Length: 199
Image (tube, rainbow, N blue to C red; front, side, top):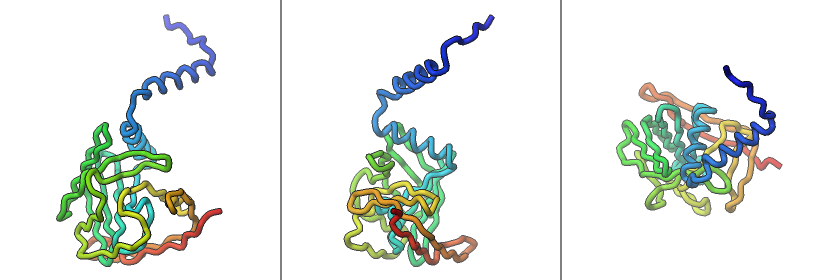
């Protein structure tokens, strides 16, 4: 016969928290980042990482990578003619991410998933230069930091976090994206935002 659990609820909650802490105590920072990525994909359906430390510069050197369930990944390279590529990815317990994109004429670099005091981040395993991809050219602005790392961005316009001089800053406002159809695919023709600092 099953004996009823007479342990008080508060005690059971504390025991459960202690068990969770013990189970994850030996995890590396990379393993914790992988678990967070998988948890966010399961909760929200996808996680979007953006180049330039999570900033959208609105020029022809922006890239978004969207991680989705079932190891599906989608990348958009913004520019005068934007490119959209679907593919698959694999991430190991050490945070190493390998992604392959259909129709992409270049090898996407192996990246490392990590987490710092601000957010998750995706960085190139070797080198930190701009990835030209299928674009014929790109304007790299001065004073905007580097193309790497990529950081997650929110889908809500009133919860967009940027890094300014290394410090997180939340902006709010409106965004506008104009799409055009070409060869049966929707491509980004123009992208603009009117975000201002949220005080």
